[in-house]
Image (cartoon, rainbow, N blue to C red; front, top):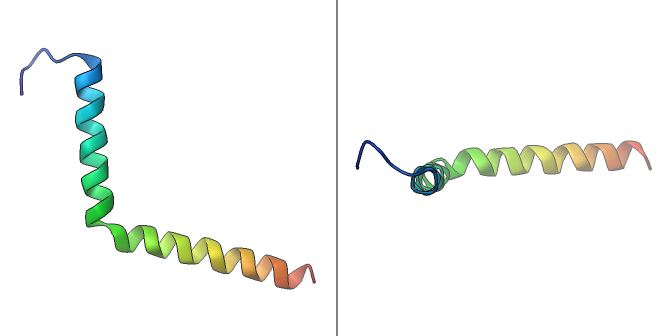
Length: 48
């Protein structure tokens, strides 16, 4: 990778890095999804 890289190339590199990180840590996103789902269910149950 060149030292003088354009902002678009740097943005693309960070996007790919974040994407690979998301795939590697998919269990974390699953945990967040389940947490949000359970919070919504509890809120709905309390508002009944």
